[in-house]
Length: 310
Image (cartoon, rainbow, N blue to C red; front, side, top):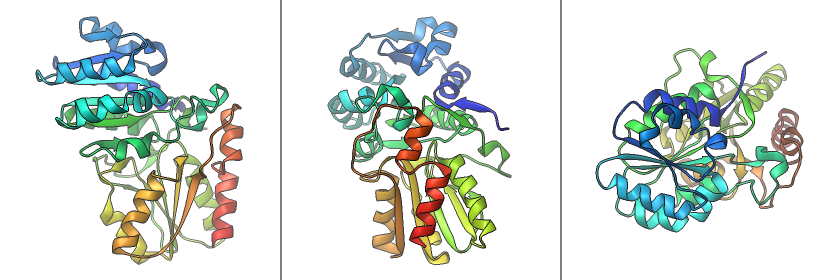
C-alpha cells in the first residue's frame, strides 16, 4: 500500500525545509493550520505574517515586500487566493513581474463536503491567462517538495496548486525522476495512446493505464506538473508518435490542462484529443472519492471514458 500524504502538507514541510533563505517571507489569510504554513510559522516566526481574512490585502502587502527584494509567499484556499485576489495578483504582482508565489490550497473537487463554493475548479484557467505567470500542479508529496524548491529558486510570479485529500506517492518510484519547471515527466512509456495528466488524478491514471495494457493497449503517461509554461515538445512528440491524446485533470476542461494541450496540437500537430475533467458544471458537497467518481475522475470512470473514446 502506497503512503498517503496530502500535497498541502508536503508543501508546508517543503516550505519549512527550504525557508532558511532569509529572503523568504510568508503571508497567510488566517488559515495557516489548513494551508500548512504553520510549519514555517513555528520555525521562522519573525518572517511569518498572518494578514487575517483579507486575501487581496495580503497579495498587495506581499508585492510590497517583493519590491524590496524578498521572496514573498501568499497562501489561502484556491477559491480565495486565485479568485478573490485575482485583480491584485494581475496588477500588483504580475504586471510589475514581482517575485511573489501564490499558493492555492484545497483546490479541486477533493475539498469534498465543503461543496461547490469552495471547490475551485477554475484556478488553473484563471492563473494561466495572466501574462508571465508560471502555474504548477504537483501530484504527490515528492513532486510537491521538488516544486516548492523550484518555485522558490525561480525569479518571478508563480502559482502552485495543492490538495486537501491525501494522495498516493508515485513519482518517487519513477526511475531517474527529475523535476524541472516547464518539462513534463514520462511516468510510463507507450506507443498507442498518450494520457496527459496533472495533479491528484495521476495515481488513478496510472492504475487505468495498467488495465489498458492488459487489454493490449500501450499507454504513454505524461505527468504535467507544470501547466504554464506547457511542455510543447512533449505534446507534439506524443501527437506524432501515438494515435490519440487524452487529458485528465481535477479542474474544468475549459482553460485547464486540456485546453493547454489542444492549443498546442491544433497549431503544431493535429490529432484526436479527449478531455477528461469537470465538464462546465459546478461541484457538489460529498465525499471526495464519490465526487471523483461522479465527475469521471475515478480509475474506473477514466478507463470507461478512454475505452469509449477508442
